[in-house]
Image (cartoon, rainbow, N blue to C red; front, side):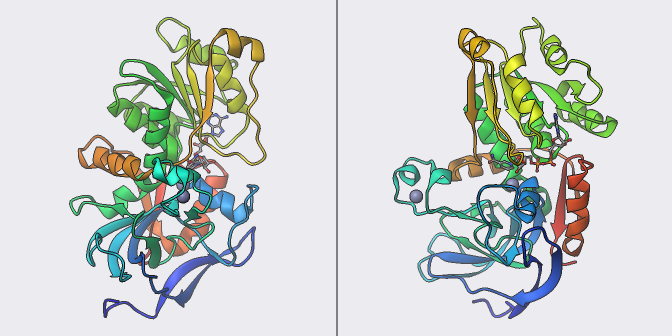
Length: 352
Ligand SMILES: NC(=O)c1ccc[n+]([C@@H]2O[C@H](COP(=O)([O-])OP(=O)(O)OC[C@H]3O[C@@H](n4cnc5c(N)ncnc54)[C@H](O)[C@@H]3O)[C@@H](O)[C@H]2O)c1
Ligand SMILES: [Zn+2]
Ligand SMILES: [Zn+2]
């Protein structure tokens, strides 16, 4: 372990599901043989972190829990089996903290499906602390010319929407609707879609999110709260009125998951990414069949998706807004997120 690693550090911890999240000092963990210890400088706040606090999903978290899975920082220690990450390297701890590397899914680059996957800020402690552990095989390699605050949101939101866009099969020139375009994943989805040569329809609510979505690449914005007919408005936003070729669902409510199958273009694909509590996908069988529509889930990304998503940023293609706040103020971010008031992403600075 590097000599400047302290015994104790600041962290945001929940003791029980439902919170509150407390700012307190906890011990710094020691990396196991195949792990690295990363001095987290910045961590993005994903809506998943809020689902974890609230216990929304049919999957229990560890407790007490340090949340966070968009952590970017500097490697300060490593286990004896780690040969391809060096002390001083910049690294990211993402949702997929580790996987078995040998099951059928891991062997085929589908490691998010690994039954033994470790999830940062959920089944293992995450990045709302100054020093976090990651499996060396899975930490994101971050080039040193990339700023650690701006890259943090890419480590979940960016990877996830980039993968979702690839899974949609949408090709350059085609149209994609981003549902939840003003949020953390949505703002990045607008940028990745634009960079991939797609035309973008943004769907969300409020003037701030409308203006931001347009700035990030949406040619049309549909305000779901103001529109009297979202399905018609989304279809009307495509040149021939037949609807978008793909829909990326990153909203945190169930209703748009039902609407998407109605307005997606025949032969089109609906990609479900958002995870509203207790929600169901529902589609009319007749229209889905005769429209040859595809509905599929998409879940984070693999290590290759990770490096590609980071490379898009490095090449200057991604410039989604984020605001920085002290880590000790995490509860404020959760409160704003709960109210749907965040346009883009918040990133916490672990030094404050
Ligand atoms: N599948 C995955 O791999 C994966 C990865 C990361 C996050 N997620 C999930 O994605 C979701 C979004 O995360 P986030 O951090 O971007 O959240 P966020 O709170 O930043 O954004 C959600 C956005 O959805 C908008 N929204 C709410 N209702 C809507 C509606 N009816 N129509 C259109 N937009 C609507 C909100 O206004 C907000 O802007 C969460 O459920 C999160 O857990 C999934
Ligand atoms: Zn996330
Ligand atoms: Zn595996």
